[in-house]
Image (cartoon, rainbow, N blue to C red; front, side, top):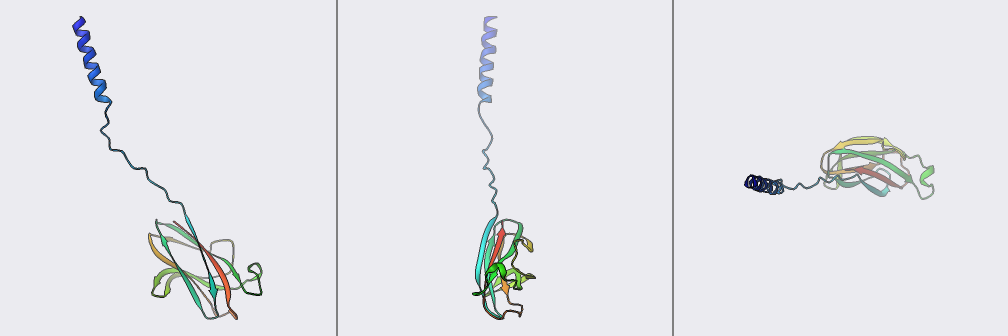
Amino acid sequence: MKSIRMIALAASVAAASACGGSNTTPTTPSVTVGPTTELFESTLAPRGAAFFSFTVAQTGDTDVMLASVSTSTAPAATTSVVVGLGVGTPIGSDCSTTKVMQATAALTSPLVVNMTPGIYCVRVFDLGNLTSTVNFAVRIVHT
């Protein structure tokens, strides 16, 4: 009887030590990247255009907002200048837009585009109503 207990004890120790090992490969936790906010500030002359390139890292919505437009004599809060605002891909020294709209400075993102990873651009341009150069700021939020 004593030998049966010894055999059982030895078997149970062997089984326990076999279970203690790990045959699984450790996994790398996935990293979730939050949105990136970029600010494009420049000037816009009558009949002119300006653009800014940015890189999207993950598929998701990109929000583009004309944050402000001002002149040397009128602060941004009192300027209701309408300009063209577009999103597209850089081509040489300009931006080939695929989605365009008329925009005034606002605290909302009127231009929302779902984008896949790649290089894109925002283009701001005069629609023919500027009589002097204006300063502007565009906020771009993307993944």
